[in-house]
Length: 165
Image 1 (cartoon, rainbow, N blue to C red):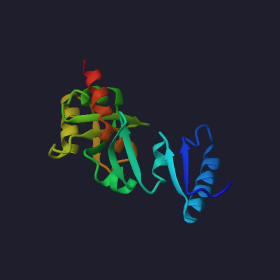
Image 2 (image 1 turned 135 degrees about the horizontal axis):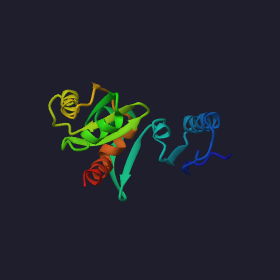
Image 3 (image 1 turned 120 degrees about the vertical axis):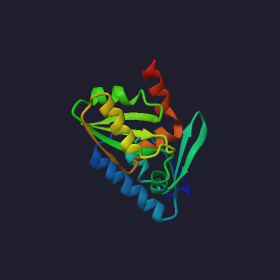
Image 4 (image 1 turned 30 degrees about the vertical axis):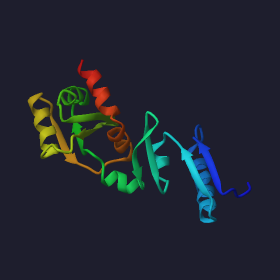
């Protein structure tokens, strides 16, 4: 490959196995080290996390911008992880809470995004679950890049609103 000043890539590793993805990204980092600017469009958040700078778009507008670590530390939400015996019942109880922006299941856990103005978010989630007779443990955790995307775009609230109806 020649060395252009700017390289535009649209979802370059779609349908590529994990090892090939790693090898591909190593090649990209080699190009960056030689002064090539690379613009990548991707919906893979783990891939976006490899980038030096991100811009998250919604409806054609930039809704968040910065280095991945900065975006994750400055997310406009609190992130509470829930381990519940019955994740389905926990999810149903949580989407009814107005402070909840999003609930996503990750294996046997739930990731809950809470309005940042909510005092003691982990305790609020736990109270909501206890009120619904759901046995659970909660913990305030670090945001993932997927959490940042959901909070920045407002997609979580829209999905939650639809679930409430």
